[in-house]
Image (cartoon, rainbow, N blue to C red; front, top):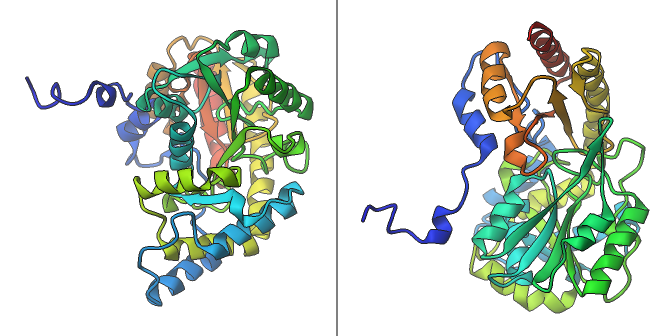
Length: 388
């Protein structure tokens, strides 16, 4: 038996990321315009980095609160009051090592091996992989795609529920499609969860990237006391902190000891000096976040308008999030197309095959970058498409 064959079957089932495969293929190319991963091109702002650096130099390098330092949990409470109009005391917040860890710990808290979790596809692939690694069964329900727009079929969601179902995972605004649930959609999903005694795991990381104006609708707008909703989120997108790996969970205080225990046995807490930077992001970062949103909105228009004008790309401008999800005429294998596009144009896109059922014919582009780069990428892609 080889070394690999001797490993656990569950670990062997962890899939290779279809996004990372393309990134690794062309990461160091000269002249590359990388639109393949979900991050902007700006480094973390100085006021956030300085807060973390000062704390590091002051010696804030010891074990810390498992649930997060009190100052950060209080800052999260203020943030939700300001952005969501939600009166959530600090006891509702749990600081974790990234949005990805927030998802993994929430899965561990909600399901047992063999349970089902229903989610909407096309979807960021890490949720389904996290569920599988915890022994759960991710059950995909496809969004409908028509006329360049994505829509949810609520009857299809409810039909996917069985006695084994424990939770619904809802990401809105959606990565990669940009689908954004209406308040009515969220109320209907919550009603389904109530009827079937299910949890909802809400990923609202892109809530502020809502191009109709204001933030996107949230489950916080429709839920009542006692509803079983757990939120997962991250500092990555709003404040250009993808490399920091700091996120949070919003959950009922009754779950506090359970979540603290799960944090203890995974990372034993997020470094305190990083949390100081996160406090600065929340309390001082509104102007920076708004600048990111404004840039994304303008780039969305430039990028999508150029590709729609080719008459060979089926898409509409997304309602939310940071991505154009493109269906290019003639593309039947998006993995192969992503490799060919980066070779031919120097534009890095993520293949739709990475995003599960319904995404196979699409390509994802993140447009939160320098406007000149986004315009150049749109021009290169338009010429590539015209030449096919």
